[in-house]
Image (cartoon, rainbow, N blue to C red; front, side):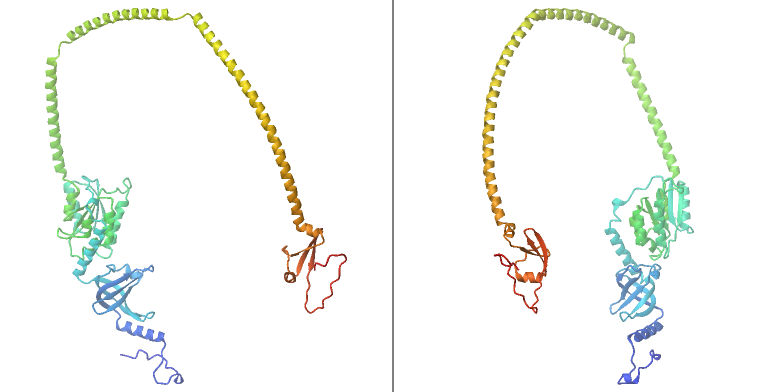
Length: 503
């Protein structure tokens, strides 16, 4: 191996006490990176994926491990979308890439360029884990599956346009019952196959019923047989979820009868072959015609039999009916009898009502008698009302006199109460005036306040205040207190009068 540090300049002799060269951390990191990348420019590493993470940057970080060692791995954003499989926890893979170092944490790592599963056992394990996960979400539940339309007008087929599958489906549909078929060409194998199949299912579901391109009544996802790796596209989660979200009934026809894929579990019907899917999609036209003719013949036979039975029943009923003239004569005689009885009953009813009116008239009194009785009753009630009014007026008079008496007594009481309160209020007013500081100011005193208006009650506060206000009985004056310790004090001047100086 060549000297990886041959280009580095040796330190000055006077800076070390030995003959070993001195390197910076960056120099060591760069030299190691260059050496590792030159020794391992492209490698294939087999291991188990551990701790995969997908940060917001779009890159992917994980570890490749076996029973004795761990190797850090990174896949950049641009290469992650090109990987054949998505990194998942516990997946055994063969990674192709280059070995490099990461100076930021003094570790070596592999930059992934491609990933492939390490054998069919890993594929089966991944398939089973994915099946359990999707089943736990309820995507394979039987109640989610829908019945296929009996005779769809439009059938959408998602498959490769160049394979034998589409020819088998079209040929079988033409034999059984020709229908309008829409083909969405997709890749059925390779890195882009899963995304194209999922996009085709979603695209058919986005079509409108009365658009330029008619919306299918039934979808068929089909491809021929192959190995597990060849059929892997329809095992991808994106395809399974797209099939589960489809509002159009879907038939999966992938591989041969022995092949089982995840789209078979989520589809509404699984066909063992693409040809069988076409047979499930439509009935046989000739059989339908024969069945329709048979049903029509049975219907005509039933109608004729029913008409014959009704004709027989009608003839039998006619034999039992009497002659119409006899029915009319009998009904006419009955009508005459009822008319005569009705006229007699009317006359009897009139005579009865006349007698009742005469009896009622005899019992009625004359209007003059009734008016006299009512007038007498009214006079009695009038007298009683006048008596009640006189009693009410006496009650109002006595009550009015009592109210006036109570008013006079209340007025006297209020006047006496006001006089007592006036005397008490006058005494309180005089007492407040005697105790007010205004009365003290009238006797010749003054009130000392600070600039903010607070009363000053001690000399120390006055000295610290400096500028003060002196309030007299007739107003305020501003004053400045000057108490310097080094200036001689002048004796206080004795003011005239008997009052001493306040300052």
